[in-house]
Length: 131
Image (cartoon, rainbow, N blue to C red; front, side, top):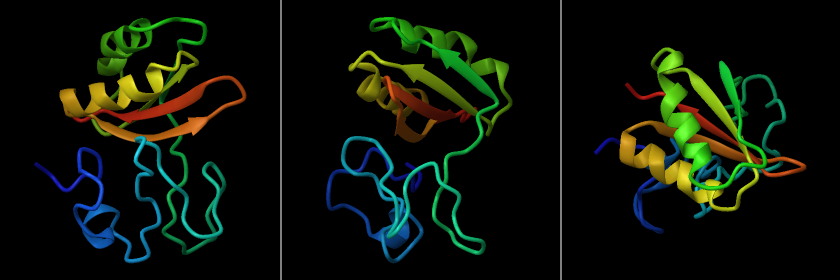
C-alpha cells in the first residue's frame, strides 16, 4: 500500500511518512478530516513559502445536500470519471453518513480523500481521482 495517510491505525507511521512534515501539520484527526497545522484554519490561504495544506479547487462539485445515504456515494461513483486522473471533485453533503462513507469509499476504490471541510450546512468532501 502507498504511503497515504488514510487507512492507518492511530499511532502508526510517523509525521514524516504520513504527512511529509515533521511537525505533523496536515495529519488526519482520526475521523478522516484533515487537521490544520499550527496557526492555520482549513480553507485559508497559507503564508507564501509555507507547506500547510489548503483546500484544493475542485474541478467538479456535486450537490448532494438534502439527499440521504447512499445517494451521495452513487452520485460520486457515477461522475468521478468526468474529471482527469489527479483532479479533485467536491461532494457537498449534509447526511451524517456521508462524512464517513465518502472517505471509506475512496479507500475502497483507490481514490484519495483529500479533506472534509465543514460548511454552514453539512460538509464539502474533497476527493482526488486516483485512476
